[in-house]
Length: 419
Image 1 (tube, rainbow, N blue to C red):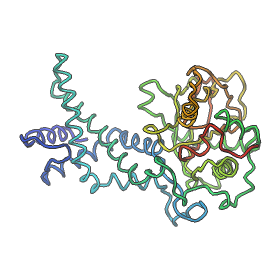
Image 2 (cartoon, rainbow, N blue to C red):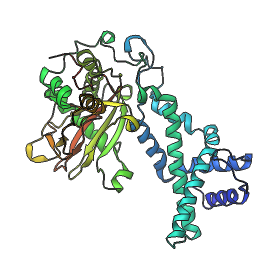
Image 3 (tube, rainbow, N blue to C red):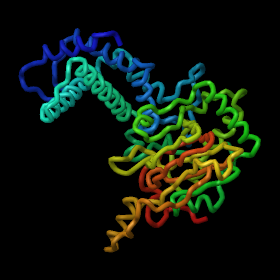
Image 4 (cartoon, rainbow, N blue to C red):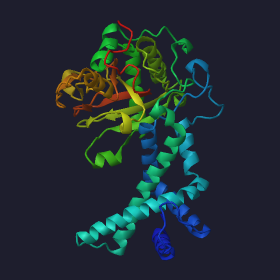
C-alpha cells in the first residue's frame, strides 16, 4: 500500500463526517471519498503478498459451502466451460472483489469499521491508554481489513450458500444415486457404514490400491516442493494449527502428471452418492478438495468441522484419505476422534420422553486413528470433535467436505438403511 494514502483517506473521512446522528449504513458518501476508499480496500486485499485476499479465499472455501455442481438433472456434475479452469468459489471471489464491487462495499464496511474503532478508542480511554498517530492508522487498517473480509464473505454466503446452510434442499445439487454412472457405489463395507451412523465415524482400509497410494504420495510431494501448499498464517500465529494446505478442484488436475490424484478424487466424488444410497443423508455432490501436509512436529488442535443452528456452515460429513504408504505406529500424527456429542435431535428425544440426557465428558476419546496409507476415514462434521496429534514425520491428507442439511440421518433412531 502506498505510504500515507490510507492515513489521508481516514483523515478526510473523519473531517467530512456529518455531525448529525445517523443510522449505521445510511451515511451519504461523495464520489471522491467512495473512489478513494475503494482504492484503499483494493490495496488492503493485495498488500503483503495478498495476505488478506488469501485469508478471504480460505474462509470462503472452508466455511460457506461453495457449490461445485449446479444444475444438471439427477445431481450429475456440470459440463466444464471450454477454456475455463476456475471453480465457483474463485469466480465468486473475483466477482465480489472487482473495482465496481469495492465501490459498493465502501459504505457498509466503513460504517462498521467506524463503530468498531470507536469502541476500541473508548476502551483505550477507559484503560488510560492513548494511541499515537502511527499506531492509530495501523489499528484502523487492521479493522478495515477484517470488516472487508467479513462483508465480502457475508455477500457470497447470501448469494451462494443460503440453501446449503439453512436446508440444502436444492435438488439440482443433491448427489442422487440414480444419477451416478461411475461405478456400483460399493466402496465402504458394513462396519464402516454402521460406525458412521451409530458412533459418528468409520474408516475403510485399502480404499485405493497400494501402487496408486504411492503415486499419490509422490504427486503431493512434488506439489509441496513446488511451494503450492502454504501455512494458514492466522491460525499458526495463534498456535491452533501448523500444517500446510492448498485447495484443488478436480478439473484443475493434470491428468498426465497426477494420475494418482485423478483416480483418488474420482472415487471420492462418488462418496456422497454412496452415502445417500445407503444412509439417506441428503448430501450434495462436491469436487473441491483440501490437500494438507503435516511436516515433523506439526499438529492441528481440537476442533469441529461443522455445527447446528448459528454454527451451521453446511458441512455434514468429512472424508479424509491418507496416502502415507510407509507410515508406522511410531510416526505420530494420529487423528484423535472424541466421542460423538449428542445433537439437537437426540436431545429433543430425551426431552419428549421426560428423561435427562446422559452426562457426556468432552474429553472422552472414541479412537486414535493412524494415518496409514490407503485408509479413508469418514466422520460426522457437526458431531465429532477431533484433533491431529503432533507428527514425527511428514504426513499428507486429502479431505472432502460434503454439504447436507441437519436432520436426515441425524435423528436418534438412526434413520438409515440397516446393514
